[in-house]
Picture 1 (cartoon, one colour):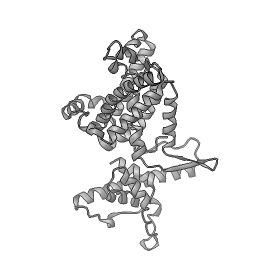
Picture 2 (cartoon, rainbow, N blue to C red):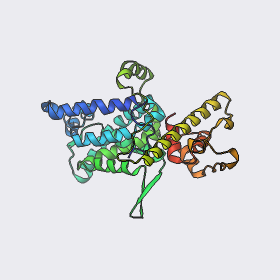
Picture 3 (cartoon, rainbow, N blue to C red):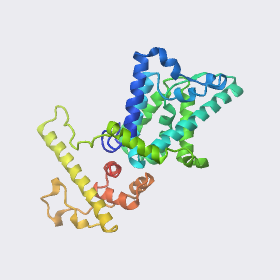
Picture 4 (cartoon, rainbow, N blue to C red):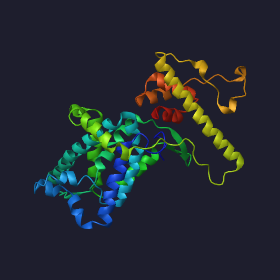
Length: 336
């Protein structure tokens, strides 16, 4: 399901780790232990517009009171940690903060529009930081390339993004009024991602806040570097185990090649010493004359990687060392 997120775990994603741990723990406590305090975290728009309880715009959008919403939102946040690795923790937190603030305004406007146009009163919306989760679908749709994985019934193609949309659809259908929250999140995500009205210069996390949070919370929410080796399949034969180990070693060699390429390029001013490359384990015994010429990098794959924000040179390097495997090349680029 999470094939687009690069390396496993929460390495280089402290903000994502905090979002997974803190709101989930508070939601569990409010559901099991402190049920009498759930009313403080209701997203009550009627109390905001009529009783002027503006504090509910903050408290009502911090913690999910439905454990199903908590679970689905955690799955999506874990998948979207790719953006924290790409943009950095401060810019990722700024996106979440900006869309969280903008979506609060959009929710109130949508509720007022429904009341004046269709005479439908919206009192309580689903609670929790759901709008920023839906807002992250905007950069996910616009910047993450679609890589075909398999086909269902020979006609329907499944990509590396299909199951992420399925989880989003599950979250969307969990409540009758969730469509208001999702629409507000998508609108705010589009506004912030495209920097309409220069909102990115108005709603952001200050640098001093990011530095202070990094010093104070880094020991708690920093993730360890993931182990390269993965567990072998259950019940695998010796031949399958050997094949899997060879695949793992090949990926490690390709990753080390790509890392060395980037280091050489920075040291030599962009010039790459291709002679330092060495073949993978499977072809180590072959002679130079018997090796096939590397396949030319597909222009569409290069374009897709460039749309994700990588330079053309990095995209070409990643595709060459991964033998034009777009998924593996994307993982290489996201891990560095």
